[in-house]
Image (cartoon, rainbow, N blue to C red):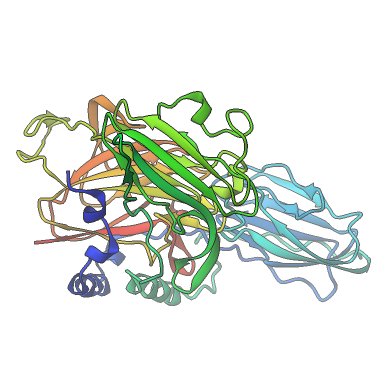
Length: 467
């Protein structure tokens, strides 16, 4: 297989290709490929002139409606989940909130005890606040009066969109969001990390844990926790039989460690401080060592306070050796494999859904996600990595994916799928052949991870196939 760095960098996408992509997308190739599924905010009746004793609040993917809630002291929020997945509503830092509500469930949330003032309410499910489930709660002076609660929304006809919705504007905003793809941003992750070769042949890699400004999408810079300043961190690649050293330098404001997820390694280097090692303090370093005894499709990330370090960007891929592929020309599931199984490109596809990085593929959110550019007939090998907090069913238009390995372990019975469901911590290795020319959409099929009322966003990219 070709080296990863040569196979997958934004630099390999020529200006002419970008121009061709823009032309294809503006012609509507992506628009006709992606179906819209409503996930927008609910329509809530306006409040009466006198603030009501209670206010109806609706939760959906990913919105809280109304976004600005005003209620007198002592009032009650009538909370209902009109979405498709569980949500709750909590007052930030006040210890007040509902239970987790399934679709159609509701709960009265008393605000008794909260002093007049302004508060933030949100859904506590990981990633949901970043996706838009946050609202402002204003509690006014005085007792709640005798006005009835605001009526709930009418969800007949058009889901959560009301009869006054400007549908033409919805068409335009989707078209406009797609026309921006692919958008240039600063920073590229997944670059191959070159080792230093020691006298005994050991491959030594250097990683620096540091906080940087990272451009997730055009103009949106966030504070990212990174390895070597990129999201994802650099790819560590070695061959079976290699001795590997990874020197980790900590430039974070707190201690850290590195867990080698899926790598067969001695316990002292497993990276779980303080159980297997001392915490790597700020401005200190630690060296991890292992011998690559078999092929791995693995990853590295912190274990110490991983609940915010990883969503904020600290992860990277480890690839050891090659994943065995089925025999060329063989028949699997009624489909015949190509006579030439040479891999043209191999790369990780890392998913995230929370923290400062949010809904993203390889550290970028649409329209800044990098297209996969291929020639007709190319065989592509892709390693899915889920470093997020939710499952992600990854759907590729146009070509079936041949699943050849799970967590780096080759499958005795590879299988075809157009959608591969990847849970947190999992890796799936798939191969597909770019059989047809065109711009083919590639996205998470949890639709609110890919589209909002403001157009396409998040976990969407495309495979661009040229003659």
